[in-house]
Image 1 (cartoon, rainbow, N blue to C red):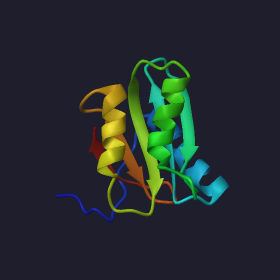
Image 2: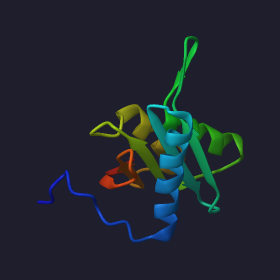
Image 3: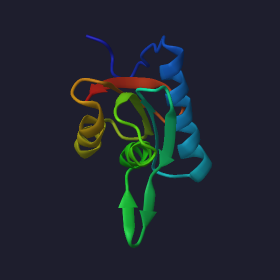
Length: 120
C-alpha cells in the first residue's frame, strides 16, 4: 500500500496542467482551495473558493459551474489544490453530475504535489 504522505506521479501533461492551474488559482487569491477541470473538448476552467458573507462556493464546484456555463457537455478530468486530506463528497457529486462516474479527481497539496486520485 502506498504511503499517503508521499506524492503520486502524474505522467499525463494535461493532468499536470490542471493541477498547476488549480494551485495557481489558490495561490493567486489566497483562497482555501483552487480547482481546475478539463472538459471533453480539452478546454480548462480554473476557480478558487468563494467565501463571502452571502455566498460560499467551493473551488471545484465553481470550476464545474464555469464549465457548464460555457457550454461544456462533459468533463474528462478535475484537480483540486487543498490543505485538506480528502476531496469533499459534495464536490465529487458536482463532478459526477457533469462527468459521470469514475473520472479522476486529483487532490494536490498547496505546493502542487498530488496525494490522491479520487473518483467521481
